[in-house]
Image (cartoon, rainbow, N blue to C red):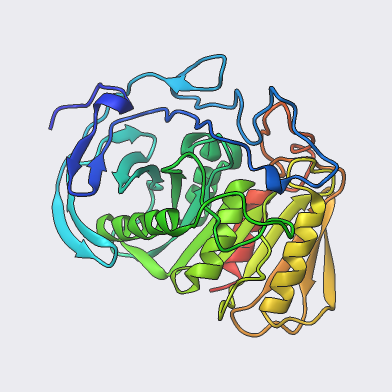
Length: 352
């Protein structure tokens, strides 16, 4: 098939609920702020988006409002059909963006998949989903976390989704003790299931080693998945988000929570509440061992049952950002701290 040159909006092929896209930079999403994620004394400046702003894709054009634009060239080959747990799919040839990235769309959302060049098709490998924060997209999450570089090093497939509605629904969870500010989470949970089925259809992944991490609102969504569909994931690691586990039922899931003590977007007390509820939910004792990391401490809770490991890493004086990552200009901290991407993968690796 010839290469695609259209931007995202004009390069969509629909077959039932599956669309395949050619794109290099996905547009940053702008939606209403998650007000309930702020502590009562905190506010967000009118000209500041919680998780995005001008932090856009490096592969598309950049405008003053943080939206990326531009087309992409790609090539594709092959095509299969299958019926999966979340629906029937006809897999059309997929645009390959280069540098190991391929672009997909399923249901109402889009996502990028990174395949390390050293992976063998004969070996089932882990897969890590990384959910972006409010007003971000999959490409900016890739840039923030550099999870593709970690995938090269550790040998897993990395998936960077774009939220189908402009945000991740976290219905069924509460945010720092207040009612959730977003609708019921069925649609985006379904989107996760569809992505997982799609990746399993097109690649040799180990369904027993599916991991989820997320930043800010994406961190809340990671907790939502752990609560609502724990059978789909091996472990989760929310960063600067969390999500109290008070409404989880029969969900014992290994959890690593990461947070900055100076976060004024998703307050640090939210992380402490999330930690306490996951410790209780996973059946761990209140005692823990401390492990020093650059700029912070990780608490490893004791007496957790098999499959319920719980850890909490907090970074002193760090604001709303990804530890060790290139944070947007409105975030405090970041580069002088232990790399959260390393911590997340080290934690995931301990569960298998």
